[in-house]
Length: 411
Ligand SMILES: N[C@@H](CCC(=O)N[C@@H](CS)C(=O)NCC(=O)O)C(=O)O
Image (cartoon, rainbow, N blue to C red):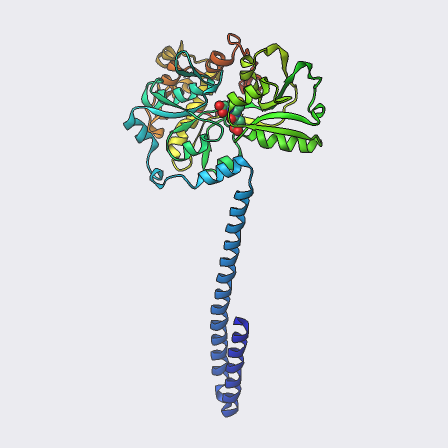
């Protein structure tokens, strides 16, 4: 329709110009100019309208497609996509640091069911674990008190909405850094504190020694995790059929496996290791050698507050750097007072003003290391040789020992 009307107008102007030319050749140039300008004007307006229409239709189609995809997505994606829109506008622009300081406590989301990493001890009613210590480290840096933390137990499914809605300031709960969580879901991940991978536990007497032996097996897996998707991908790639038994949290997943409802139990290897002692007869089970995925676990915050993200990021790096430099909870004060090494002096705020740029005291890392420890101390306290886990550092060794734990310079 639009194209036809443009053509008709052009035709009319040309006819007029011919008529005028016939009436007096001296006006040809003038008429040509008018025709050109008019045609350009009409064509521009019409093209703009057409483009607007096409863009509107395309955008509408994209939105419809995205909505459909979200509706058809598996559990975790639906939960993640829906919750994303639930982030309150009230959070925008507010300084998390100011809020935490005014409140006097850090609200930290953690795990209550994974001993070693995040565990709520029913006897003491206290949270403890490797992840929980990172909540404490941030509280020590920001409030000067590692105990000024109010823990909130979260599950695989509710951890993201709880962080998005501002109910917590920070989430440290064996959460895998993935691109969709880092972008579409609206989070920023601090450095990975534990490099993990997905594993598979089976009964020793099952005759299963590899994933290929699991044709037709039932596998217990927890909802709202990367585990659920990796399981599907890995088994599809292997061409092995299995039946997932999807459960809402760790206790139900572990007991379903223990009761014999599943031939296999899959989650992060750290998770399998922490659940092993909770089984009726731990000796009857084995974690297969195979690693099914990459699971870099670490703290995360909401998008939208760069200062808060920087604080969590550099407190985490600070624990790495302290271990690398041999600074421990036992010697940190002495190091701060006597060290002449400029690298140590910068990290501990004995010189320079690195803390100030984060909105913190320059000696913020002294409090962290004194009250919580360096990375190695935190690791050993919960997972090291003196614990039931006695977990080798593996990829979680310092980069100087062939591992992946590496801090950029405190400079
Ligand atoms: N790292 C994976 C899995 C994390 C996860 O939720 N693991 C389970 C199994 S160990 C867990 O922590 N469950 C504790 C609970 O929900 O109570 C992720 O981020 O999705």
